[in-house]
Image (tube, rainbow, N blue to C red; front, side, top):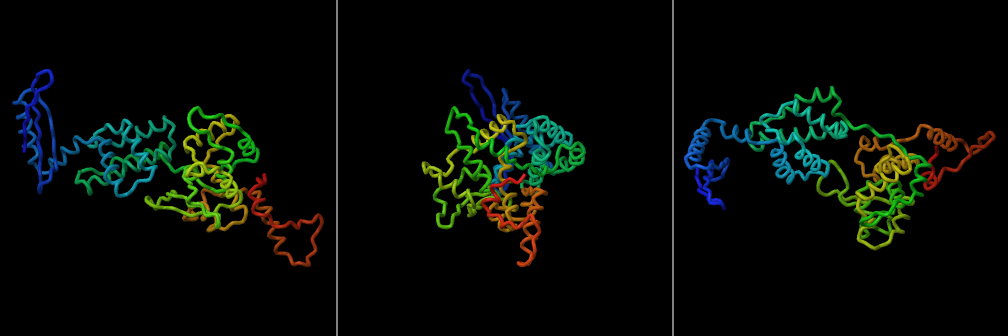
Length: 385
């Protein structure tokens, strides 16, 4: 039914607010409001809307006609996010989408060309194919639930029709598997570099954090979430709270061993805070990037330190399940992309295996190659380049 409300502004002018609401089973399923300067115009508009809503499917059509992509995404975040517990990446991506020009387009007007244009814009902004792919995937997710969940006559067809062209233009795609290994010279330079003090806040001890990142194989944000209360002195382990896991969005606390110097570095941190490394993760990332620029180290990210640590564990002879216990990976498929073994290192491993397989009375030619199996600490310290 329609209601007309008379209002008087601060300057004394009159206005008439017309509201049309439709209820079913005592619940408002549709509401539309418009303000006019004349009562007759308000009544005429309300009567016209009421008449149009009597047609089959009219309510859905009017809902869609007024719904923007941004509003659809916001509803998806607010309602679906409450039950699914979106991860940080998905929530950030969708919030970012709401601030893009595509969010202002009416859902009813959305075309594959609009999606392609959005992806071109993201490319100009510097987003890679993998990042842009997330935009398209999550937009499709929001469109996909509109019909079964909210009863809106919306589907994913604009996204599905855009995919062939997006692939052809290489605007979307899988992320490249990184094989970047930090060199001994680069690591030495980073550990010896003294970053400038921050103007605001505490400057992170970058040498300690860089070494700990390699030895622990932890992500940047995981390092800064470590708590002293979660350290087990007798077992030399620590609990990583809310560790990243695509299969678990709510609780994924994991106890991991601190091998080699990871334990030593942790032990020498001052206990001035509940956190072991009480610094802002963004500050650490910014400091690392500035250090790399100052030292002219190219194409190295903080996350590459985790890759380095995992690769070193494999080089030291650890088995897949043992490395996964440190890194937190659930499958070999997800762990493999972080493993960047050096082909030349297989020669050393081959020699050690041949030595171990020889009979004890075998004659060894000179120069002797009988080397003791490397100690874990020595292997992990060496860069063997």
